[in-house]
Amino acid sequence: MKDEQLKQEVKEFWNKNVCGTFLSNKEKFTIEYFEEIEKKRYEIHPEVFSFAQFTRFYGKKILEVGVGAGTDFIQWVRAGCKAYGIDFAPEAIEHLRRRLELYGLKAEEVKVADAENLDYPDNFFDLVYSFGVIHHTPNTIKALEEIIRVLKPGGLAKIMIYNRRSLLAFFFWIKYALLKFKPWKSISWVLWNHMESKGTKAYTIKEIKSVLSNYYQIENLKIGTIYTYYDKLQRFNWVMRKIASVITSLIGRERIGWFLTIEFNKKSNN
Ligand SMILES: C[S@@+](CC[C@H](N)C(=O)[O-])C[C@H]1O[C@@H](n2cnc3c(N)ncnc32)[C@H](O)[C@@H]1O
Image (cartoon, rainbow, N blue to C red; front, side):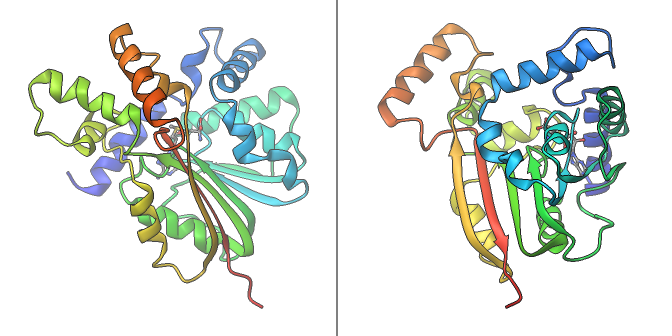
């Protein structure tokens, strides 16, 4: 399948399933709907706060790539950032616009746009934040290069992508390869075909280090993993959950988290 065709499929998926909206069945676009999405997102993902550190960026120009329903984005605005947000799913942007309006919040700019072709100038943002997004787009490297390009010298990138060496990825393989009598299928194949939108990728820490070593503009690289709600296999049966909890207690949570976090600065000019 060609990249453009895949991208269209990914866009349609997220347009139909705006990220995070499954958390509420209240009437769409009401305050109750948005309140419930926000409450549940941070119950499930309290780790977002320590990763994003919204309040440290007061007055800074920030870009969020792939806003989804905009729950994190409104935290940037509430924290007093000059916030710009993009997503290529029009329905996601509609959610965010309605949300800002409902809460009387003002962002600098919110628009439908492609992470692989940002129409912002070079060296424009103090922070670029992208949580769970660029592994879905066909050309992840292009999206990464765009993040680096639009960052100011000295600016910071905070990116979360999926970790292939995680407990969740392994159990996805058990469910969609081993138990389907296709043990020769790889974890990458399983994630591509069964994790959210078609074409989802996941990376190892080693792969990310190797990719980023090609970019001379980067410094202060920090890569980590976060053990999440998903790694407890909440949506699997009790047998799988039990096995997962035994594995976790044997090898520890540090290395097997589903979220792989990447932070780096763009080198200053001086
Ligand atoms: C898993 S959701 C994450 C949304 C949000 N960051 C969150 O944490 O809830 C992935 C989002 O990335 C967006 N996305 C994927 N590829 C994109 C691209 N090339 N350009 C812009 N948005 C993209 C999708 O439309 C979707 O809203």
